[in-house]
Amino acid sequence: MSDGKDGEGLMSAAVRESVEGRRLCPGCGSGGGAPRGRKGGFELLGCRACRTLYVAALPVTEAAENYEGYYDEGNLAVPEFIDRRLDEIVAGFEPYRRTGRLLDVGCGAGTFLRAAARAGWEAVGVEVSATAAEHNRAAGFEVFNGFLEEARYPEGHFDVVVASEVLEHVPDPGEMLREIQRVLRSGGLLWATTPNGRGLSARALGLGWSAVCPPEHLHLFSRLAVESLLSETGFGRVRVITEGANPVELLRALRRRGPAPPAHAAHGEQTPHSVAGKERVQTGYELNAFLSESGPRRLVKDAVNGLLRLSRLGDSLKIRAERRG
Image (cartoon, rainbow, N blue to C red; front, side, top):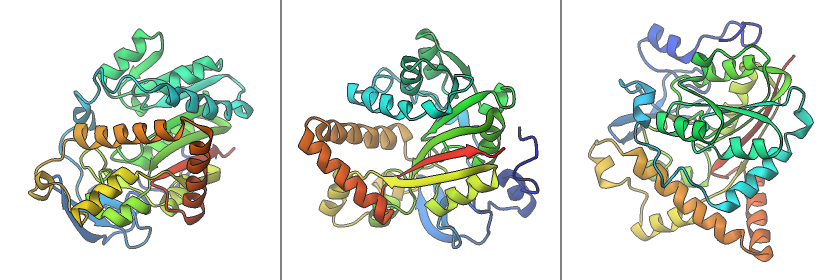
């Protein structure tokens, strides 16, 4: 848990909820979110202050229970081009190497662990899915099966902490960020990604966007919300850019002539994250594989991402931040 030096005086989202009797915005802590509709049996609110989209009430089940059966042979293997891209990302961590230790929070299929190991890092992981944790242990990695706070790593233990597609899943992202800040050494790097709640797909598709999928995703932050949350939890030199979009999903919505959610979601049933999440990831893999096959296609991809960064409309928030001393 936090040593209290950073983010002093902040009240966690979970505590604020119990005090107020209702959930406040997990991005900025403000109340009175505007109703945005229902999906998967959950009421969704839009924060008037920071534009974060979030569920009005947290699921009654433990978070880990939502990921039983999430991983299987199909999504524990990834395309080769993903490994190449992760090698490039990990190469960017080199200026932060002091102890040589890297932590991957929510390590999933272990792609970041393998990339870090190839670059000579001592890479360990945290994963709530027992299936994924065992998969990575079988590959020779040290992986804690549970939540980050339960792992009780020493303070200042890691040079780099990776949290790819994690913040949108946890009930109290502020608490997780404070714990990440604690286990990072002074000046250490947090590298993270999370869906952009104000990106192109979010604006065009509304609740029909596949990333809006409670109880898997409990909130989709705006860029400003992420920057504020990181600053409040002890991080400095914060940089958040937006990249990526899935034209396959956008075109499908246009063919439907409207961004209406799937029928089972509209009727209040839970949208299976194993369907929404896996379809989104699979179509993303296919598109990226196509664009990575040749030099001209990679130039197109780079140009589009450049526009999405400038417009701040990319579907993914790419985060780099350092622990303040």
